[in-house]
Image (cartoon, rainbow over all chains, first blue to last red; front, side):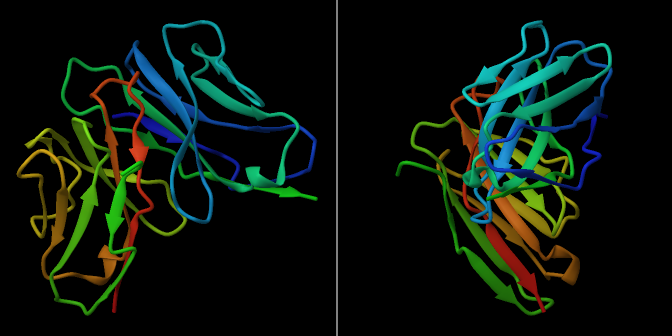
Length: 117
Length: 115
């Protein structure tokens, strides 16, 4: 079974600064996807960024980028130029690249990020 | 609609009552997932549908939990004889397909409180 660990329950950052959220995972699979989701107080889970394990290049989406270290099974999220709207719970998630059927997400426990003005 | 719609947004029930939670996925989305999110935790998988077929129900915690999607669109998660430990947010997600290159889109969830 796959597990996802987020070791930072809470973090804070000043507006306009950079913050990095950590995530490690455990799997015996060689082909999989990794995700970062954002969940603001409104509860809707929003996809921030996605990484395919077979791609060596780190994914980027505007101010969001990842540092994917496959051998270390590490997948950290860097948020640059933090904005007040980035305040939310952030979840790291794993999905096995399967042969069809359930491609369920396995989530970590989350990191609560607060961006201070 | 533009997104995944869940109703009700909040549900309070007494222990032992039955509840039904509804999910209306994005039109045309083949895959539908239910997750349970306890307070302060990440979501945990409950069950998965591809169209009307329930292909994975390995995450359902007991036989009191039942899900259906009879016409391959709207889905209902039913919990019978509710217990206090069923209190959680229930999230529904849908996607175009069942591959990681088709992202899952989540609804706002139903917060279930069992008294």
